[in-house]
Length: 72
Image 1: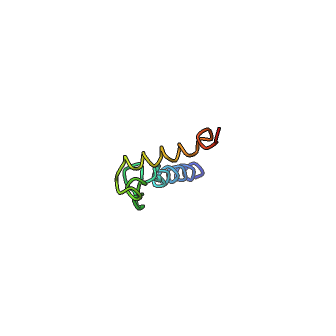
Image 2: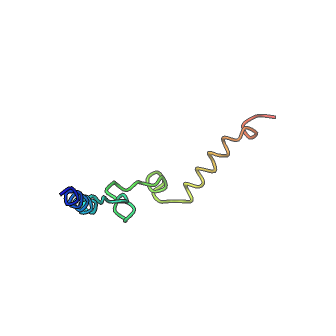
Image 3: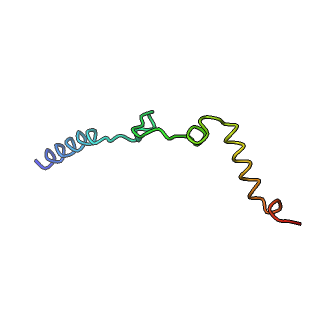
């Protein structure tokens, strides 16, 4: 009788182990994305003009140079 209970318990545990499988990967791995699309700075501030964005970035970098800001 104990062997039968043990066998039934093992069979029940074996059957339930297959039912408890959960999804291993988040949704964005499969290509699904539920969020909003991020706007790029070139699209928003410079209306898609990459040259204007690069000019603004180089101008900003030039003004942050300490050697150019100081008077000799």
